[in-house]
Length: 502
Image 1 (cartoon, helix red, strand yellow):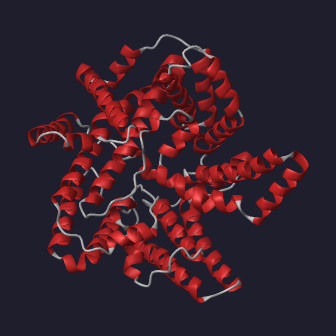
Image 2 (cartoon, rainbow, N blue to C red; image 1 turned 60 degrees about the vertical axis):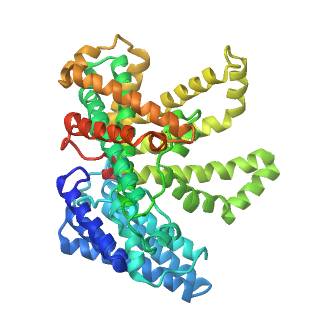
Image 3 (cartoon, rainbow, N blue to C red; image 1 turned 180 degrees about the vertical axis):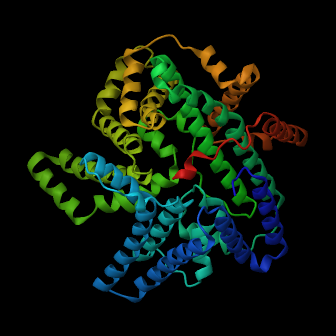
């Protein structure tokens, strides 16, 4: 059941009607709808999916309660078994095949691993991370374990977020899913308008930029460095509008039930540094890995002892940096594995960003001093935009490898961008996409609207807030214009959302 399919809209309409007409059992309606949605969308059999969902639920629910009833080494063992059980499920079903293939390739081993290549389980990595976070929060006594198994089940399998996040925290979700929600016009209006904005991003903007990316990266050897550079910038727009559009649909869907999910993007292309970019991109995933991986590693006994040793022998600054960099390496290694554990994804989502962040941290003072000596450095607006452009171009290095789907091809494309610069064959590329002048005009106008929306978001506002200040007539006109553009110019039924694969 795709988010862009007619069956999803029918399913959503029925769920909303039942949710508000039967207020006493709202939680159970959402839980039933989540199970139906997940089983309907699952590529494997219903019986196997039920077994997997039951296993995940019982392991999470039972493990959290057992942690409270045990002490000392027994509690540690319960925590370890619960978390290892969740991690093992995620690893075996999602990453074992790719990692095995990668290791076999690196070691030149002829091993048959097809038996590990399971059918992808939609949303597995998202709800598993949420479940692990819940278990760890209970282990750290941030709140007591939930005794109502239906509440835990709804937290794990809540259908709006199950397809591609955001990664949520139990305490924030519990307060909302247990509250009795009354039908409010504001929730319905906000939810529908947020969903429309998401569909506009995905169907009108993203799919058109995807056509340029496909044309160039399908045969990158036929194009020069300028064409590859253009296609990579187009992929930046494609990926952002695809993923953030999906988040808009998800957050809008959830808002229809009065449940507000955390934001996952905050105008990332207005970031002035690479570090700031990753703080604004896929926010909930980054925060999850920082809270449950990086910080625990950084304050562990081993890292504390290492920091003291380095401080005594190499100075205070080194004593702080070494544990920090090691914990950062662990964090980005796991993020690389999370993205699929294929070589090109690992380079794109782990090696390149981690390297850029370390270089930025090590040379931060030097870059600042150099910037102060450059012309126009006193013009803050100009210099801010230069830094934003620099950050975008550095991030595009990651996406060259994603688009190339191969480390070797990605390196060749990067070489061509710098050494094989030629004129941009824009007319030929547009002709190959067969989108025509109308499609090109829609792309340009779409980018204009997107930049304006992100500008407002960067300033702490939003299109939604801006429109709320306008008259009812203006809001209605914009709403109908969006619907007409989506139905008339939207490329409906062409592809799935990119992040569904993760």
